[in-house]
Structures are given as C-alpha cells and as structure tokens.
Amino acid sequence: MSVIKPDDLTDKKPEKSLLSLLSRKYGRSKGKISVRHKGGGHKRRYRLVDFKMDKFDIPGMIVAIEKDPNRSGLIALVVYKDGEKRYILASEEMKKGVEIISGENVPIKKGNRTKLKNIPVGTVISNIEILEKKGGQIVRSAGSGATIMATDERMTQIKLSSGEIRLVNKECYATIGQVSNFEHNSANLGKAGKSRWLGRRPAVRGSAMNPVDHPHGGGEGRQGIGLKHPKTPWGKPALGKKTRKKVKYSDKFILKRRTKR
Image (cartoon, rainbow, N blue to C red):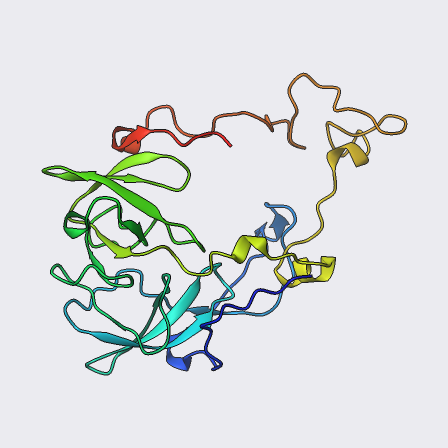
C-alpha cells in the first residue's frame, strides 16, 4: 500500500459552514442495482466548492489546503477581504498564505482566474467554463490541465489532456495553472478493504460465471469469450461501440477528436 500526502496539506478540520449532507444511492434506482460494483464506503460530507469564483476584484487569502473525499484534486479554503469564506479547487503552487484574485484585469499568476481572452498562448489552465457564468465544468480532476493554443475574434482554441482540441468562447473564465495533487494516480490501494472504503464493491469476471449469468460464462477450465463481438450481461456491445450521438450540438466546437490510447 502507498499513501500520498501532499506537502502543503493543512492539519485542520473542514469548515463547518461549507459542509453539506451527501445523499448516496450506491448505484441503486428504486432499490434495484442499476450500476454494479457500488455500495458501502465511508460516510462523507459534501464540501461546497465554488467553481465560479465570481467575487471579482476582491483579493482572497488561502488559509488552508485540504483533502476532499469526494474528488481527486485538493481544495483550498479562501478568506476574502470582506470576510467571506469559500472553498475553491486548488491549483499547483497554491499553499497557505498565498493571495489570489479573480477578475478581468488581474495578474497572469498561477491560482488567479480571468477570461480566456486575457491569458497568453501556451499557458496551462484548469477549471474552465464552457458556458459563460456557469462556472468551471471541465479540467477539474487531479493533475489535469489544458493548454491555450490560439485566440481569435470570438473563440479560444484549447488543447485538453486527452489530445482533443476544442473551441470555447473567449469571454469564459479559467484558472491559471493545472489542478493540484498530480501524484493521485500513482497511489497503490494495497488491499481490497481500501477499495471498499471508497465505495467500490468487488468485480467478477464474466468468464468466471455460469452461462445463465453472463454471455461469457460456462465451459470447462479457462474458456475464451467465444463471441465475435463481446457483450455485457445485458447483451449490449462491450468493446468499440461509439456512444456519442451522431449529431450533437457541440460537434462544431471540436476541431480535433481525442487521441486513442
């Protein structure tokens, strides 16, 4: 087992006023399992994270960097000049005592948030809005970042970590710098119990089941799939099936599809 503890984590309890109850369905719909392998897990409280960061031109001081059990990236507790406290997504180089600010005319510094049209080409950004004033919707997981490729009269070209290049309105806001906790994926759970704490139940291979339970089941010893096109237990294609709509409103904003791994 490996445990990753980022250097800048603050040893404090979460801010009570920014906690909310978290109702979990455990992959059930009306009591029946709709998503397999979900259930159990440690009790959690939801942290109210401000993805908009819309306190424009009011400086805020970071007073704590905390681990959020509901997401892979770290979160930062910010106290603004007017006394209001908010949680925000922590980006790289954020630590206790650093001052940040959001607005249209702010310094191009990691942690600050401004409009895409004001950010230089080649800058790494995160927590990006797709629709104006809706708040960050993409590039929010640990260690992720997008790069600004170009800006024209109306749109900004950004390259996502998947390799996809897409257009976003240049009036949308983004945070400068990649999301914190980039070492998240290198952690080794070490034992089955840790996976259960995270709310993940065991996954059984279809080839280990009986024919009645799965299309891949049955046979003496270790058997191959035996099907030309592998299926899920419900007969749907399991490999290579395209799930995106053939005609989707956002197709016009995607200049290049993500690269296959």
